Image (cartoon, rainbow, N blue to C red; front, side, top):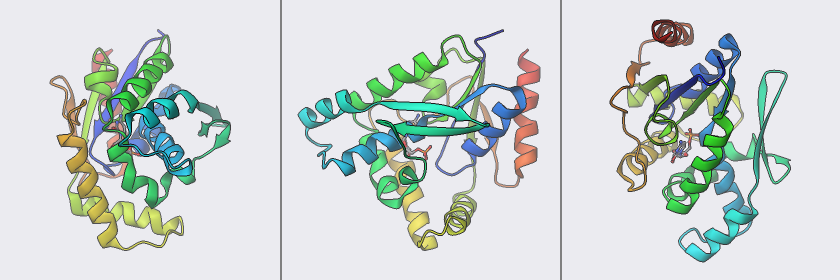
Length: 222
Ligand code: C5P
C-alpha cells in the first residue's frame, strides 16, 4: 500500500519531530518536517530583507523560493535554493519570526500545495500544525500532541544548549508561548485538533513510550 499518511500536529516542542522521525524509520516511511519548510521561507525573508507585511514582496519572494527535501542515510536534508539550511533554520532569529511568516495566506498556500505533492502516492509521516486539518484531512492516522508548557520549555532548552546555542530558559519559555499563541489564534488554518485526531500528551512519557503509543494507533487502524 502506497498512500498511508500519518499526520502529527501539536504545540511547539512537544516532541513531534522526534516521534515522527522514529515512526518513519520504524515503518520505512518518508518523513517530512513541514515546520522546516516555513522556517526555510522565513530564513529567505531574513536573508533577502523581505518585508513580510508587504504582499508584493512576499508574492515575488515566493516565486524565488525553492525548497527541497532529500533523505540521505536516514536523515533529512532541507535545501533552500540549493543550500542545506538544517542548522540555519533552527536559529532564534528564525524562531522569532516564523509564526508571523507562516500566518500569511500566500505563504501557506504555496507550502500546503508542495506538501500535498510530497505526500502523493507515498507512505509518509508529516508533522506540523495543520497537517490533519488542512494538508491531509483524509490522513488515515492523526495524532495531536501536547505537553505541559514548563516541561516543553525545559526539553527545548536542553536541546538548544546541547547544540551550543546561547539562550536562557526564559527566552525559550517566551518563544514557545508566543508561537503557541500566534499559531492557535491566526486566521489561516490555525493550530487545532482535528475532530478525528487522537491526543498524545507527552508530559510524562519518554520517547520509546511515545513511539509505542503511535505504533499502536497504526496497528489499530490497519
Ligand atoms: O514545527 P516547528 O516548531 O519547527 O514550526 C515552526 C513554526 O512554523 C510554527 O511555530 C508555526 O508557526 C509554523 N508552522 C505552521 N504550519 C505547519 C508547521 C509549522 O504554521 N504545518
